[in-house]
Length: 63
Length: 137
Image (tube, rainbow over all chains, first blue to last red; front, side, top):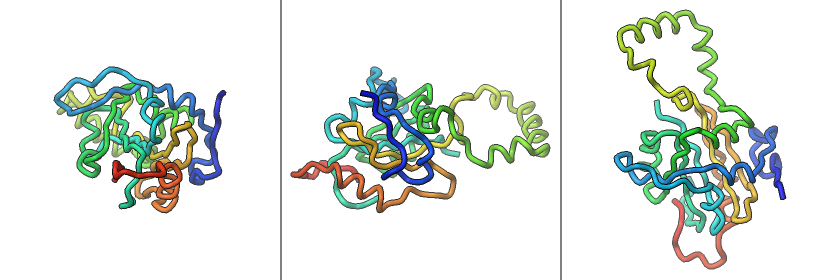
């Protein structure tokens, strides 16, 4: 089932955006152990929160 | 961020490997992941990567452009940077439950921080009943 969220508990700055958590969960990410090592294999982001939930920080490049 | 212990994972998603340095320094217990296409940033922005407000001001500034052209002429490597991930691409923070319920969202805005009370409440709501100390910072 496609799940849509927005508003409610979310902060007002994000209230106007309707998010599809299915799309969020499908984003492919690779583990980064260190800058020197190659990234790990791609995994769906949703796999990372399915057991315990998660706080996800989407990081801006410094500077 | 809150000092209470929580059972959820703490994850940073970066657009480049070098972007994770600040996160690792501030959150040594967190995990870092690479999203090289900035797909998550795009989704978080509702379909486009959100840019810092200053960016628009810079674009409109003739002083900026003349300075940029001069700098690029002297330092050609400036033109070789990634166009999909730079310091003006805004990120954010969200909390998601194990059942993919979005409990909290903060879209980054320069000079603002996420509401700690709401963030704390979201994390508490998904804490495992018998917290064993495995926690986010």
